[in-house]
Length: 268
Image (cartoon, rainbow, N blue to C red):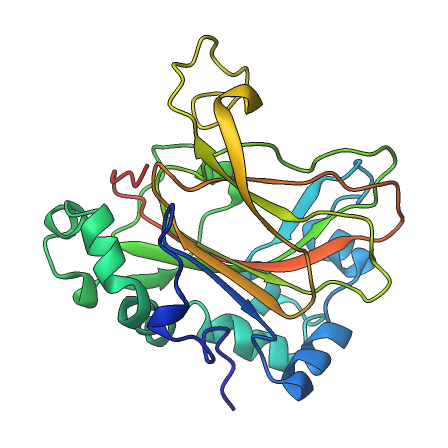
């Protein structure tokens, strides 16, 4: 069975207007998507695996690949899905589609890893989110891939789960696979921005990868819809945010697939 979220993608589907960006609706066959959707872990399973309460307002809770693979609460189909999307075969798919864009945007990456992009060493991500914030964490492989279950928790007051930003500088790519419930009409669309070229007059309180809205212009909105794939190459132009969600008891659900370098290379 082909589990890849990229199985329907062609190179000509990639939008390079602002940065390499891919949006594919109905990314997986209906039968496969429906089986994955009905066995997506609920909040109770998140609490059990993470050993914490899901009680923050509109907050992103993540089950990383290794935790999911270790849990008896995660189905075998999901485990196969996770294994594939943290594998060398999946990375080869990415290179076939995005390799030219990666080399153009990040010409020094091959020099840094001392091999061609096609020969990049891949491993499943072993560090935690907390350790990810510690720049002293290093691994010998060139890229660590993760495939995470993510929920944005119920919304008590209308809020944005994340505002205008670039992803972490050591991240090569990000892939979001939305698993929206049919009854969820409470917001949470992905917004794409471009920089207006204005000099930043103030430093954002959360750090340099966070941007004040007044120096950006929204150029595209990607609706939060079921079975929809969003994939982009991280770079200084890959500015994005998530629109506000209204008060609801429903969680915003998606899979986050990403690749990171922990040996000192920064992509943005």
